[in-house]
Amino acid sequence: MRHAWHRTARGRAAAGLGVAVLGAALAACSDSHGSSGAAPPSAHGGAESGSPAPTTHPFTGGTAGLTNPVLAVKIENTEPALPQAGVSAADIVYVEQVEGGETRLMAVYSSKLPKRVGPVRSARISDLHILPQFGHPAFAFSGVQSKMKKYIRKAPVYDISQENAGSAYSRSSAKRIPYNLYGDPKALLKQAPKASAPHDVGFRFGPAPEGGKPTGSFTAKWPAATMGFTWSAKQKRWLASWGGKPDVAAEGGRLGGATVVVQYAKTTRSKFHDFLGSYTPLIQTTGTGRATVLRDGKAYDAKWSRPSETSGTTYTTADGKPMTFAKGQVWVVLLNDGKPHIP
Image 1 (cartoon, helix red, strand yellow):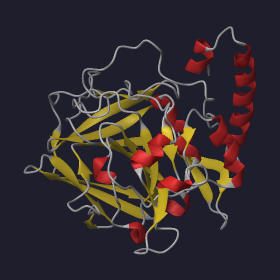
Image 2 (cartoon, rainbow, N blue to C red):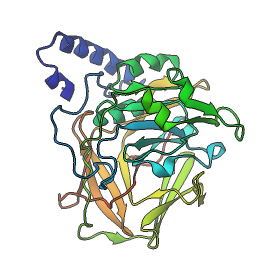
Image 3 (tube, one colour):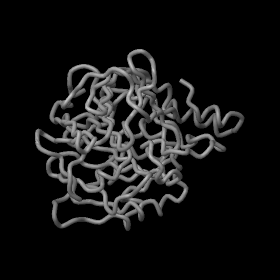
């Protein structure tokens, strides 16, 4: 598959090198059974230059922070990490399966920044397949296993991990290692002054489409974790729970979003594994698939499409019309397309 950066770099000597790098990464990211897993695009990725500035924020549909840089932060999502800091300020929150059937968050910021975010944890290969649609964002994480470092270097991200931006991180005495590392978002972004501004990633905001099934709650299930989302008419958003208990923000109040996208994506085995031998899942976020979109107390059957890793993800209703989101924070909950399983 040809990626967008091939088109923008056509005619340059670097393009040939990029193709070779991409081919090598493709083989390395495949699972042990030979299943293909698209390799992260090289650092040539990014938004087209000369694109008009948005009049509303493409991540939230609001008017704040239209040109603020994009920062993505990897956050622990297991019980020792709760309550998490800074998640309620994110524009987009991805929920991804990791080793052992647990989950982690990747929070994406632009329209506003919290004072503190965390606990910050290590990156995973699926992050590098999600992030190219944001251009060249700043990416904060605690570290990666040694075999993944070369993929981080090739990815279209500014690496502001603890290794490279240590002064922007601090440890809290309230939690034990490794659940006590926190980042200062403003200090982190100072380490990535050229991070991309926000651009269209496929989201569409506006009045709710016709149809939808009145729904009070939804429970997302992974092999070793559950998250629930319950509609609050008073707050006009879906309130999150973790493991059957309210998912409370460190700053106070419940976590949750105005729109929750439950995106079903094939989850396969990557070549990476942790020190216990548990393999890292690789979530296939390009291609097409089905989704359930929660907004305004209703659930909509939808389809998702992302033709390449530098493209955004579009969502349409069952009859092919744009699936519009409610203004505000968006959660993208990535579930295996099928029963929960550990690949």
